[in-house]
Amino acid sequence: MVTSVPRLVIAAPSSGSGKTTVATGLMAALTARGLAVSPHKVGPDYIDPGYHALATGRVGRNLDAYLCGPELVGPLFAHGARGCDIAVVEGVMGLYDGAAGEGELASTAQVAKLLRAPVVLVVDASSQSRSVAALVHGFVSWDPEVRIGGVILNKVASDRHEGLLREALDSVGVPVLGVLRRAAPVETPSRHLGLVPVAERGALAVEAVAAMAAQVADGCDLAALVALARSAGPLAGAGWDAGEALVSSPPPPLPFPSPGALPPDSRSALDGPRPQAPDGLVDAGRPVRVAVAGGAAFTFSYAEHAELLAAAGAEVVTFDPLRDEELPEGTGGLVIGGGFPEVYASELSANEGLRKSVAELVLSGAPVAAECAGLLYLCRDLDGLPMCGVLDASARMSERLTLGYRDAVAVSDSALAGAGTRMRGHEFHRTVVEPGAGGAPAWGMRAPERRVEGFVERGVHASYLHTHWASEPGVARRFVERCRTS
Image (cartoon, rainbow, N blue to C red; front, side):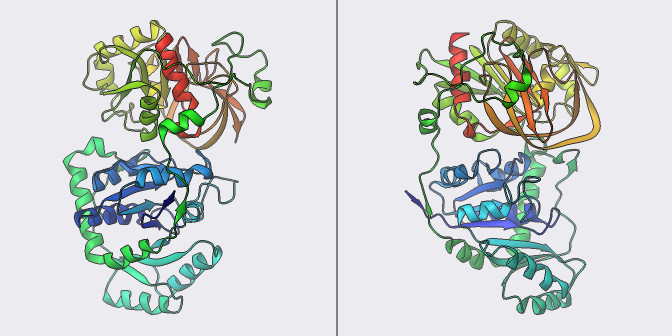
């Protein structure tokens, strides 16, 4: 199969240049003109895809060469872009910035090359004129395999300033595809982990996206941008499919002899080979309902997780821990992803009915997969306010930002992963859980530092680590099977 969807990558020399405004505004402007736009985000970011989804009416999807491997970038893109007229991919950080110490891995440049997509460079021109030519020339010449097809100049002060910038760029041979004037920024408030998510802002988020669309439509040559997108080369290979991924993925590794217990030598678990499991897929068995936390407090989730759960035979039902007083009827498994429980701690604590419902599910032995915000919610308390209390741990806000990719291995057998399962993940939080690991930790971190982290207790797998299940589809299959048999 060959994917020929026109596509653009919106990149920048550095963070703060205006990528999100341009990418989201372009998505919304093209959508308003009747195009079906497929939105994508490079890296592990959960918040920007929410704005992308609002701009396009389609699910925002991540393309992360570290979490999923370079080999899945094309298939995951093709999956999201299926049936669309054009795709817009927002980059991360600076164009050539990737995973620390890993060269180009997970950079916007690497993803652009994997997608055979032209790049539009968004440049903050507020404090320069002729120097913009040297800047753009450096980015164009750094990697000849990256095709920078145009520049959008942001924060331009005046017509005279624009003329100086255009004159300088004439010598570089890269067309100027847009000029955005220096103006009051679009209202997109931030806090300790970045932009405030769409789910928390309601009508204000709609207004912000509309303002971004107006800026881009007024200041950019949309026809030239579409023409550039159409110059992208064909992308060989089939689109990712959740059902096919489950069939083709190897079965999950065998558990250690004492399920739920830390192996006697945790260092050997970090260093040793991955255990082998017998061939064959799990029996489809009886249907099972998996409840997935949503709402304003739990907005961090990759769309592929729900797709994999459904492909494994689960009925996926979303609930809102801020509003629903009990879990959906018939819940046989629970997934609580990331988000901002620290912002809603008082409301989550006040919902005693749901906290009790979650605790009862855990006591029944049902599988529970909790990441970051989910971990905090399962703790005894968060900033002194009672939470679900199923983990003997206390959580609190911290001044320290924990951020970065992680290379991890499961050191305890759980409903989510067999001991020895290796996965790459990402941490992003300003909270601390004490203790940081239970008697049976969830993960052993291999890099950038060696430590154990998280909790495996009863059916619970709770950790700060965000993972992308498309990289290891067997975890979804294993989780649903445990739901059937618990």
